[in-house]
Amino acid sequence: MLKRAVLPLALGLPLLLGACGPVASLLSSTDGEKGPLQFGPLAVGQTWTLSGVVDSRNVVTTVKIPDLVNVQGKFASYSARDEYTGFDDNRAGFAVATYDPDRRNAEFRWVGDAGAASFDKVVYTCKLDNLAGNPLIGTLTYTRNGKAVANGTCEANLSSQS
Picture: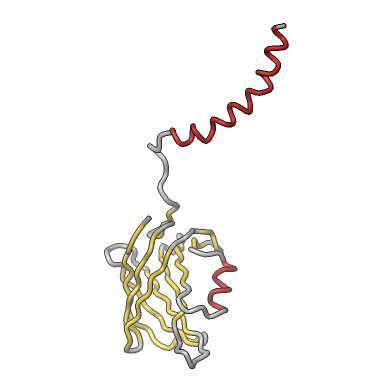
């Protein structure tokens, strides 16, 4: 008789314990948990504001960091495929942030607006070699159709972090 009572309990116990998992995770303490994934100055959930002057014009954009993935030894906010597609499709406003741990520099690249009547591919690159200070100051390069047109200065400010 005891065997008949123990067998259903033994078979049902894993199901009961599995059902407690979500409750246990909600009740667990968050002390000691790591923050968002971060490499250099870049962290998942950040939004950066980039501004600069190049070729006698003011340039401003925001760059969001939805993820950080390893792309050829650098940590980037998008995969190599997404980056290629964004720049190849010439999507105005598409932006990628990268951090190179070997060189200890960061770079923000984005597709600029070439104007409604133009099919030119405009890309801006803000390269930051010194990652100390606030704002971060670097070199802004303006590229049109794959050729560097002009250089200027840029600054990167952390706008928000979620």
